[in-house]
Length: 418
Image (cartoon, rainbow, N blue to C red; front, top):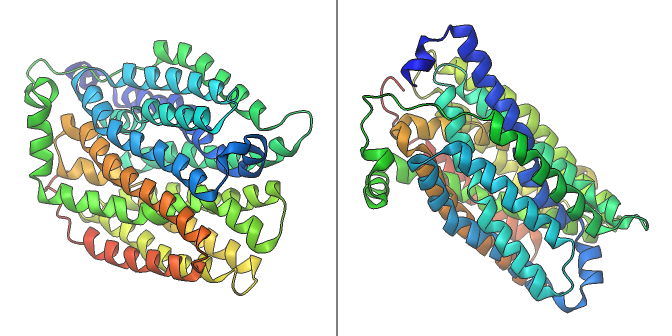
């Protein structure tokens, strides 16, 4: 934190810190709404763009977004650490919103594929910069709560995206309207955001090695950090299941329970994202309080979340075979509670194991590994669906992966006093 900020009264610092979270909340919402709503409109999009053809092609299109997002995330994180978190955030919002608008005007699978790919490039710059900026401002006992509030914007975006199926089904609107509307909203919001956001100024005596040194030194320091490698694994493995739930659950519910596209989209997003929204606040509050007694407080809260995700995966996988829509929804709610506990503590845990000027770069690397594997999960799920692999087998594997993740997070050792 800069000397100019330290000189301000504590009440002013706190208001400024929460203002940053408030300004970023709509950006987080748009970030996930723009990427998520296509899953709820799958039937309409595939019906309109005939040359998509197969589930594998659809999965490949979803995977391409994740792969380029993954590749660009460390670059975006490094730029945010090296230059400006504010400009990285605003530039990312403007470009991905423009691409969102263009997506509403594609006419072939090839055009859709490349539009989603370019959206992956532009969106990759946002999350590392935003979470690092929040961590810069929230230096004390509010960090997990602040990240939790920001993540609520993500969950609200996914929930809103779940209603896109109803818009796609409406004769006077359609799936293209959603891309036009949300794209224009993001372009317009980027303009005032550029004037309202503020980076935390550097102290005059701060070391420059992390912020202005070469990228190889930053990446090398992170890769040589045992705790960081463990956090990357922990961040990545549960995301395999989460991306399949986000991207495929509308289609799974529609096919398994013979319900409408609109109802499937809302059911797939509203329940688990609503649960995650509330649990992110609860998990952030609990983690901040636990940190008063133990430097591993945030790790313990995140581990509790992982313990909840394990049975949720078994429930989601077995609900279609049991023809129980209620079980599917209950399992999604439990998954959401666990995910909120997990999600609100990743950047705070990262802040306990790396230096401040490596936070965005570190989160970018975490996104790189997670999204690359998430893309493989999307593509692989599409291939397995074409080959009729039972859902309970697929989600049973996800549950076992989450058990392994629980062991990993408990091995992380934060630095004292962080």
